[in-house]
Every structure is written in structure tokens, then in C-alpha cells.
Image 1 (cartoon, rainbow, N blue to C red):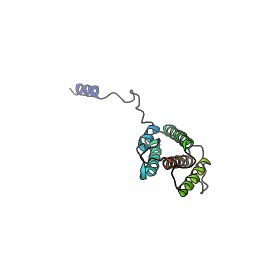
Image 2: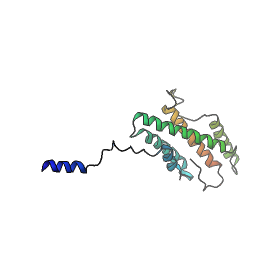
Image 3: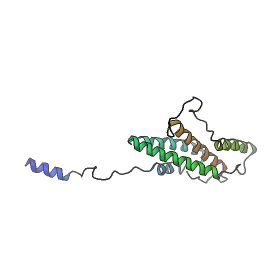
Image 4: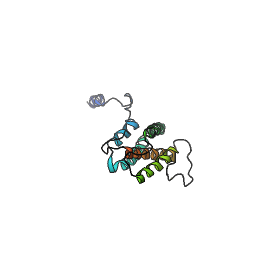
Length: 164
């Protein structure tokens, strides 16, 4: 009787997950777009910062080392691509801005175009080993966050939302 119960129990167990293809996690680019998509207004830069940090966590948690690296490469490539697109679309000065606002905007834009981003990594002399070192990834994210912030400053209508 016990043998029959054991046989029935084993038949009712779900088929091993090894036989089924592993379900891919949501692509990090899609995840980041979903996170920052609705951000606008006073909290937008904070949301961009939080979403970028969470995207890095998203790549690093629950993945094997090769998957982490692939995810981080996708994240960095996407951020670089979007930053370049945003910078290419920015006007040289925001419309309808005061002289002070225009001056600040131009200074920030010039720093971005020269790829000068304030970072905790640079002044301390920390050097990255490879293109996916923490400093490189962080500086890439900071550049994207700054580009999005400038894009928001350049938008005349406050209710518009910029693309990630």
C-alpha cells in the first residue's frame, strides 16, 4: 500500500523545473523605462536617481556572475545611448528662461558635452578596471540623470514628460 501511495505522490509532483526553460527576468531597459517613465516635476531627479540605483541592484541580485555582467552591460549601453540622444536634442539655451537660469543651464550643458560629471570616484583617485567598474557605471548614470534634468529644464510646458 505504501508503495502505491508513494507512486501516486511522485506522479502528482510537478515536472522538474530543469525540464522547462528558465523564465527570463524582465529586461533591465524595460524595467528602467517603467520606473522613470512617470517621473516629472519636483521629484523627477530624485526618481531618476533612485531608479538608476535600483536598476543596478536589479542586475546584481538573484543572478549568476555572467548574467550580472550581461545585465549591467545592457544597462550601461542603454544609458549611454539615451544620454547621447537627449544631449543631441537639447537646445543651446532653455526657452523663456531668465539670464541666471540660462547661464546655469549653459554651464551644466557644457560640462555634460565635455563629459565632466561630478563623481565621488574621480577626486579620490579610484581607478576602474574595465568598462563595468563601479565608478564607470555610476558616472554613466550620473550623466544620464543630469541630461534628463537639463531636458526637463528645456521643456516649456511643465506637464510634458521626457522619454527615458
